[in-house]
Length: 333
Image 1 (tube, rainbow, N blue to C red):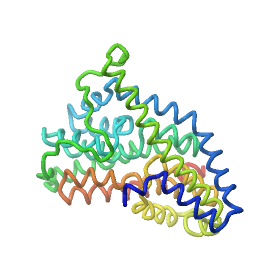
Image 2 (cartoon, rainbow, N blue to C red):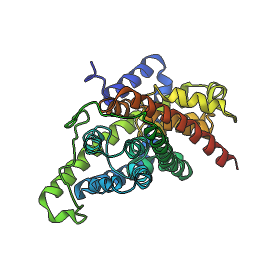
Image 3 (cartoon, rainbow, N blue to C red):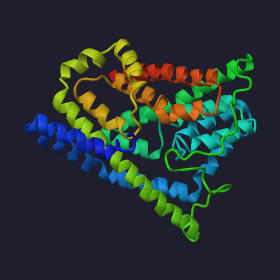
Image 4 (cartoon, rainbow, N blue to C red):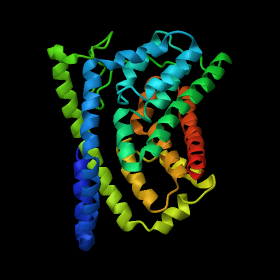
């Protein structure tokens, strides 16, 4: 069943339902989706080439350097690099498993784990193209701040003896998204075109990411079209619109069970904001949804004991609410 429910099949199913139940609105829904996708297309191309270059050059090797030195320094660097590394959620599993097995502090690992699902180069570009640079920069800052916040909370808790013996077992790899640990270890080779194996990896990665982004963004824009067409603005305003903390808290908790990856969320939030969702609620929804997405939580659950998983999820929710409140305050100034 899960194999049949691909983004493409969901798109076709949704459009067929609209055609059967409300044919006059089929063209407006498709029109909204096509115009939005066309506007994002240059960003998609750039993001695909950027990630392919980072992968082919072996840029992931730089991330390991964040986990060396003093623990406080590790937390800051891990949170920063979590937003820059081109890791997908399942690639993080063998990387983090190795770090924990070698004795890397949980505080730095948690900082990386919290910031990594929130932002990466393509997510930043797509968010900026759909929601604007202030929102994209706000999300990037929230990602790093959440990583630092979570890292230092775990650092304090670890020193009190709460997080001893955190690793469940050694994990060798994962293939849930069709990727695995980077085959290029050690020093990155930025001029990758001199190595035939890296050139091959570049094109393989470019093709894989292009297909991934296109299918998820196509679904996202169809959902945006349906949202704008069928959800009354007053419903959104009544739930997560206006000022105050309550809409932000609601948005954060609604974002937890909503499985939206970082490429689907911006177009959907654009539709919600057009209908009256506040900027702070949108930020809280996006942060909570990224931290609690199925791949991100699976990556944590598969490696560490339940108390660490609970800490991860709790820090993510609290961080989402704080990010929403701060972003709302800044946008209202």
